Length: 355
Image (cartoon, rainbow, N blue to C red; front, side, top):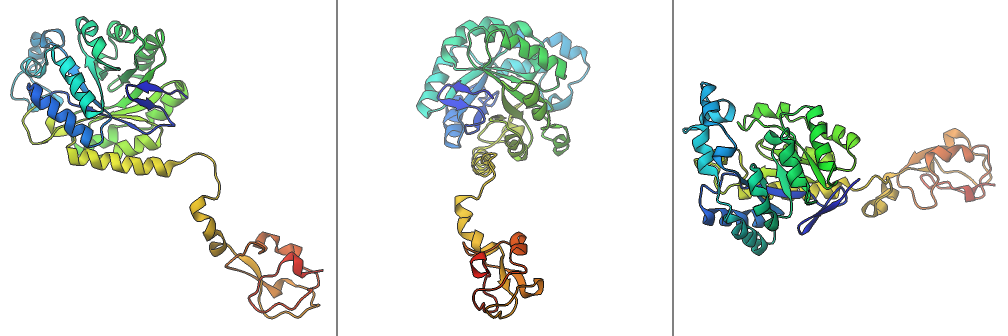
């Protein structure tokens, strides 16, 4: 089991789930709007706001996407070309110190997913962690550049094979073990059919193979059912897109969480964390007084006179069971023994009552 700090927070199985609001393209090209989303996410219970740094020219090939003939999957709904959408969604590097300052004001962490090697050095002083998006799981050079400084790294693994995940993990481990390994599905259509493809049980495989990693979930399904499932399976970092209005026009708004749905997700998760508890099976403090009420004690089926030799038919297990009551599985210890006292019908018969 591993645990480490990300900014103001500790992450790991012994700590509360770390919630990351991915602002992504939901800033709509406006720094002021990005800052407002930071404050909204903090008030809704986010622990961090995450952004994405890229230049359209160094993340997508306009020629390549046009050569596909038509836009596919979630991109099919975009009114502009893939290149144009990425161009509009890119943010200036100069936003980084302002976003960091705003996150500090809001009391949450700031980090980013850099999709450009040349941006990493500029961003490094401003972030407390790095995120590798699923699409870059095979770009080992970029992963290595982020891992080199020893800051925590969150690795999303959507649309990847186990061998590809293993190769990326090894790149990180050459530098450090502060890894959050995130199960993910990269279909962003928000279709309810996507639930069948989330494969949360992959987290079990990750836990067995990489016990040093903190488990996480990067999710794009509606609501928070997958989040609760992931947390129950051991995930302690959750990333979902965040916006103030899912009806706004833009590539990421439709499958994002609103402030209200985000707060609901966090609140239900905190309840689940309390409910999970530890692995020690014991009588809990709040149920001690119910033990006597719920359990059965060996009692007299009818009035029994002193001196009677006890037979099976003289006894019946009934609630309640006082502290000196004899549990049913010990009834045999009374059989064939003589009563020291008279026992009214329904009274418990204890070992102290027999010779």
